[in-house]
Length: 91
Image (cartoon, rainbow, N blue to C red; front, top):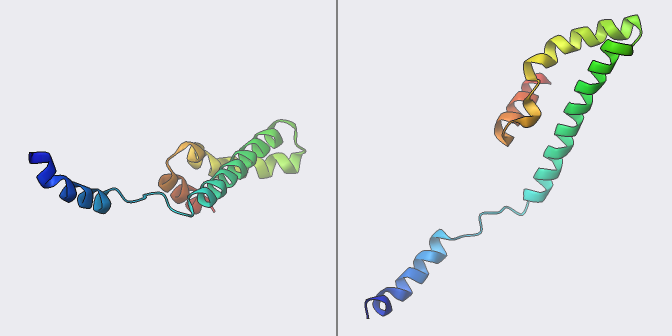
């Protein structure tokens, strides 16, 4: 009896609060974020390899880049918002 009296009101409330929270752009954003993380990881690996097996001028450049990258070394493991802020600051 109580349920029947309020059932339509609960349905209206569901329509208001249970909206689709997924954006149409979610997949595109995730794909772009994955590419950004992959590029960042590739940069870290390239710098690391250049430090180990690069020519003298490559090692010098890699050393300078490593000094900067070390401040952002875990950027790819952060939340989307923090990751975006860190990579933006790095660039």
